[in-house]
Length: 95
Image (cartoon, rainbow, N blue to C red; front, top):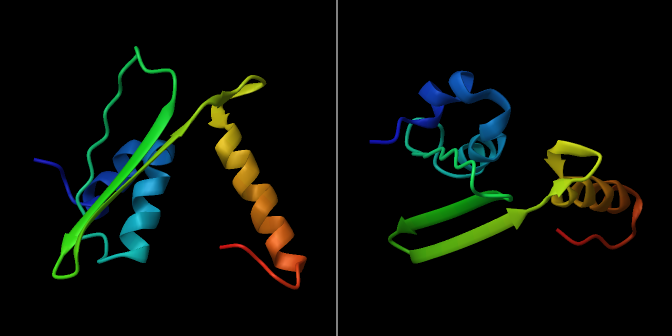
């Protein structure tokens, strides 16, 4: 059984920031479940979001490779920061 986001957030710290963001954007910490899998054989940082409800079902999977100079972060993270910086000053932004 996966614990609720409220209970697991302090335990896993940085590794679950994405799960916390999904909980905040969705149905909240208490109703959002998460599963953290540590697999030393996987070379990418993988986030998978699955949502089900009266609307139907959707699934999104994002895989990011570590930055060569900082393996604790990914190129996807760096590009997201650049995109958000550009969006903050652009007359038209992509969200």
